[in-house]
Image (tube, rainbow, N blue to C red; front, top):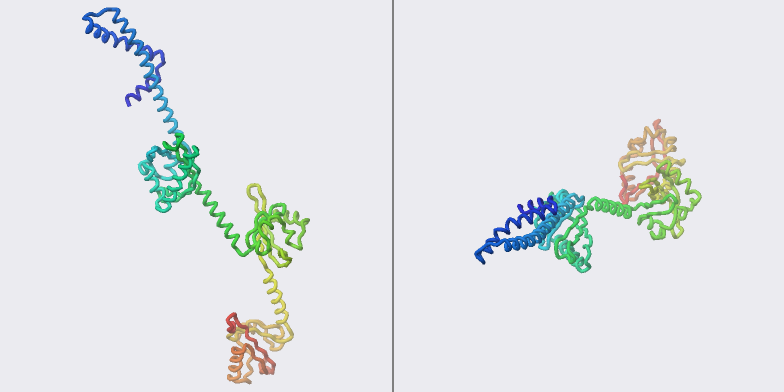
Length: 432
């Protein structure tokens, strides 16, 4: 410490002052030494001998002191440079570790401590770092092997090590995704190494989220695609390809008017303007499979602008079966409103629906009949055995047909030809 302070003091003294101090010190020290030596050799002290000795000692002291002062200046400058480097490393916004050739960690910058929580007291050696940063023994072994191979490759190529992605456990047990890279301070990667660690946790989380979203979109059973302002497909999911019979590489070269027989390229600009102005729209259209088959689709289009780029993202649902069912329901509804009286009940004989002909024949309106039991129409002509046999036949055979006497709303008893058909579920049981 004293030598360091003395060296700093020397840096503040001019060169001529240092030389003068050296000469004066040599003169003060050389006179008694030379005189003593001459007296011991000759028994007397002469001026010539003393002068010669003084001159020689001054020259030697001048040279030696200059060398020592130069060395001290270099030492102080190195110390100054080292301190500057340490401050620069400490101020660096990237976590940095410096380790020596013996595996000792000699420096951690402030960003490293803030990010991972470990100090030099926690990880004085690389071995301590391995065990704390990678607590799982199996994963630790993988990382150490990968790092060793990476350093060995860097030694052979005389280059910095290749960046590697690792998951590091912080002191508070959080996991961070990090890119690690090392630079040697010698030419052969055998000495001190500076290791940088770039936190990519946020980027990894974003990548994982994007991967998850893409996987969900790809695997969902709804066609999904993205269009650019020119109407080109820029993304299609797996189900779009499956639905249309094209490979993804083929669809990317097409536009909606290539797969929609009711849409033309001339119509696209107006559609795009409408989408931009309204943000979303829905429509039913037909799409053409690669083999020429047409099927009905419900299109839900939405507009999005991101990073000065505009896109339309579209969900397309096959409604061919739904359209078929709708048509069948319309036919059934038309048939239900025929001239014959019709009534729908559940398995407990509760009336669910009647048609206009039923009201005309019996006099009961929907408000009066729906929710009531079928005994509303009982005339009293038939006994319990008659109705029991009727329902057993319906349950066993699915239908009953025959003449029955019923009663109108006004009390009039009348004969009618009745057909009852049971609606059964997928298991063959009468639907409740």
